[in-house]
Length: 107
Length: 107
Image (cartoon, rainbow over all chains, first blue to last red; front, top):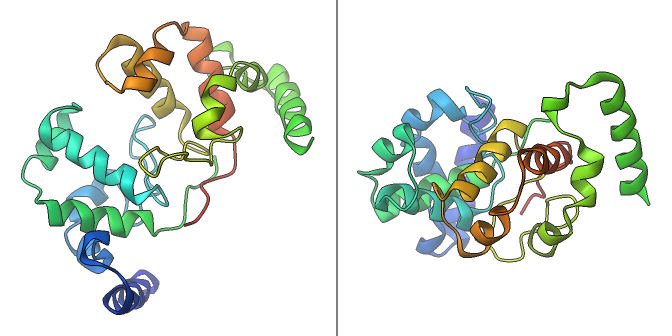
């Protein structure tokens, strides 16, 4: 519920202020189900210890990581498979969502 | 100064409690000068917007990232060049330092 309210607030702020190129975090949350099983809804989960925390990571870095997985410049069995079908818009929206979350959890 | 005290505290805690495989964060700080120009002393700097925050990132993920840059499985003009000469111990020590820092900075 808290995350839903956050998403709505972020969506409103985005609609009022952001250029399209910055991504839509609310849509990013919507399409992030497949990410959540490993990264969590807010990007602080790391299902395996060698998966990264992505909550609060830089937007541009997340965009580049997803683009590199999609193009094959970066390879990971799971990520490459998921990233293959992402559009540019999907990538920006997912990056907009995760970059805006609080993180990371301290060990 | 605060970081130096933190490093000493962490070094003591490490000496008392950690297995060698977990890395030595104090030595990681010592050998991190070359990292600091882009990532900052505590890993919260991102000199370019598409460089990642690494403060507080999972130890295992940082180890894997450096190993992948070293082996060529992951490629980045700057990182690949720096990682080429790192030993396994260097990688664990750098990961131990950065994974223990507070982060990331919120945008």
